[in-house]
Amino acid sequence: MILRILRVLSIGLLALVADSDICLAQLTLPYSGSSGTSTTSFSVSNTSNGSGVQAESSGGNGLVAITSSSNSAVWARNLSSGAAVTADATSGANAVFGNGQHNGICGRTSSSSDSGVVGINDGSGYGVYGSSSSGIGTYGVTNNSNSTGVYGKNSGSYQAGSPIGVYGYVNPSGTANTTDSAGVYGRNDQIGYGVLGYTYYGSAVAGKCSNQTNAFCTGVTAQCAAKDCTALYASSAGGTGNPLAAYFNGKVVINGTIAVSDKHFKIDHPLDPANKYLVHANVESDEVKNLYNGIVETDAAGLAEVRLPDWFQVLNTDYRYQLTVIGSFSRAIIAQEISNNTFTIKTDAPNVRVSWQVTGNRQDPYILAHPLVVEPLKPASEKGKYLNPVEWGMDPKMGIMYREPSVTLPNIPDPVPMRDDRITMR
Image (cartoon, rainbow, N blue to C red; front, side, top):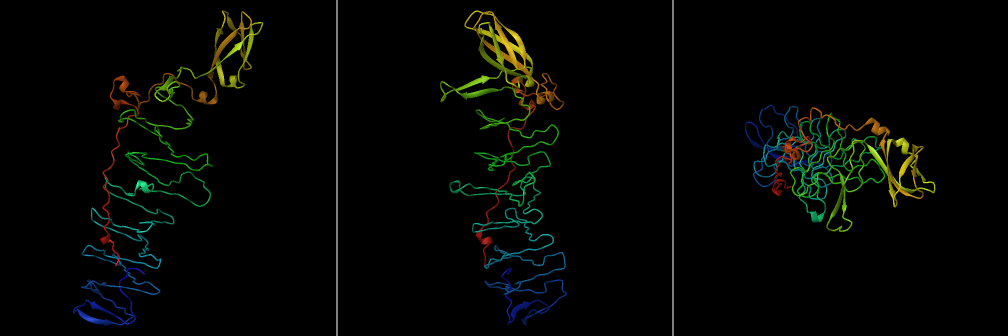
C-alpha cells in the first residue's frame, strides 16, 4: 500500500543484520525482534539497481513504522539526486497517506530553490489538494518579508483558455444566512494591502456577479468600519496621457453625499460625434435647490394658473419666481403665490405667453438630517493640506488624499520548476 519497500514473503527474507559481527542471516516469518543499541538496529543495503527494502501486503499495510519518541517513525535519505521516498499506487488508493494528531504529512528543506512538499499531477486533477473538516484546507506561512505564504502561478496559454494563478471557490451547503463568506480572503494587520493585484494589461483586481435573482449580488464590495477611513480609494496619480481614477459603464447609485471639485456632463458632440465631445458645467449654489419651469398663456382676463406636482410643497420650501413675457410687450406678475401646489400668473394684456421658473429649497428628511454646510472647517487631520495642491502651487504630497503613485511589489522569484528526475516513480 505505501512505499513499495520490503516485500513480505511467506518463505523468508535475506538481509544484512547489523550487530557486533555483521553476518548473513536467514529470517523466518513472522519475525519479531528488539534491540537496545543507540545505533541502527536493522539495516539493509543494496549495492546494485534494485530496491533496498520493499514491502507488500495483499490485505493490510505493506509497511508499518511506530516510534514512541519525538523523532520520525520513518526516516529516508537519498545521497544522490533521486527521491528519498517514492510511493506508487495503481489501484485507486493513496500513494502516501499521513494521519497524525499534529501534521499528517510534513515536508522540510533547507534549499533556496526547492520545495518542502511538491505535488505534481500529470492528468487533469489537482497537483496539491488540501481538505479540513473544521479548519483551514491549505495554509501557507513564510517569515521572509519579501516572499509569500501562498504562491500560485499559471503558465498556460491565453489562446487555450483563461489561465488563473490562484482560484478561490465557496459552495457551502444549506441556506445562506451570512454575507461574510469569501472565495478569496485577504487580511493585513499592518500598513499595506489586504489584497494586492497587479497586471501589465487588463484588470489588476476584478469582481463579477452572475446571480440574476439576487438584488444584493455585487461584483466588488468595499466597506470601512474604522474612524475617518475610506472604503474605496482610486487614484490616477503618476499616470500619463489622460488617466482615469475610476470608470463606470452603466447606472451608478450613490446613497449619501457626493463632494467634487468640478462636475459636468460629457457626450458625443451632436454635430460631429465621431471627432468631438460636448461638455456642459453644472449650475452651483450655496443652497440645496430644486428647479421647475414651463410656459403658459394667459386667458382673456390675463390670468393663468400653473399646477405643480402633488409632492412639490412636501419636498420644497422658500420658493423663488422668475417670469419672462414672450412675443409681446407686456407686464407679468405673480398674482397668487404657491398654495396647494398651485400659483397664478397675471398679465396686463390678454392671451400673453409667459415663461416661468420656480425654485424651492429641499426639506426632505435626508437633507434636514444632513444640511449643507457652506464653509466647514477642515478637521485636524486635513489642516494644512489641500484637495487640489497643484492648482494652489503646492507639492502634490500636500494633497489630503495623497498616496504614493506607484505600488511597490515585493520581489517574489518564480519557484524553480521541478525536474522529472526528482520525482521519477520506480
